[in-house]
Image 1 (cartoon, rainbow, N blue to C red):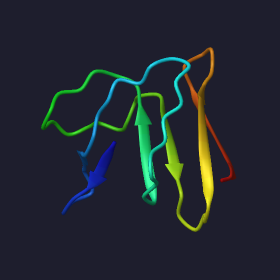
Image 2: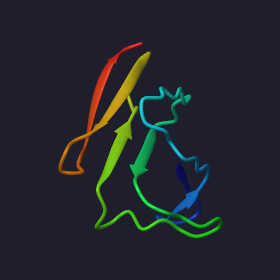
Image 3: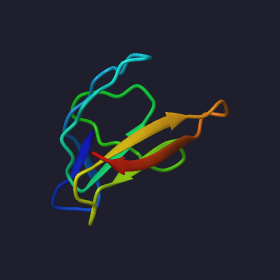
Image 4: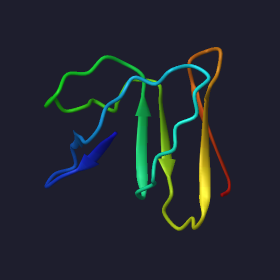
Length: 82
């Protein structure tokens, strides 16, 4: 997970290794970027050129987002009432 600081560059806020078939509950802030890859503590994330999901909770009250990765590596985001 990343957050915007005093520029348009996202800074890492939290990173964890997600496991298959495990449900994670994350309290939403307005926008999350989900990117698959290997990252290093303290390094900025390059959001361009990688398969990613943008989870945007802006203007959405009491919803949950379900993110699926398709066979070709793309991410799909679906929003449902919480």
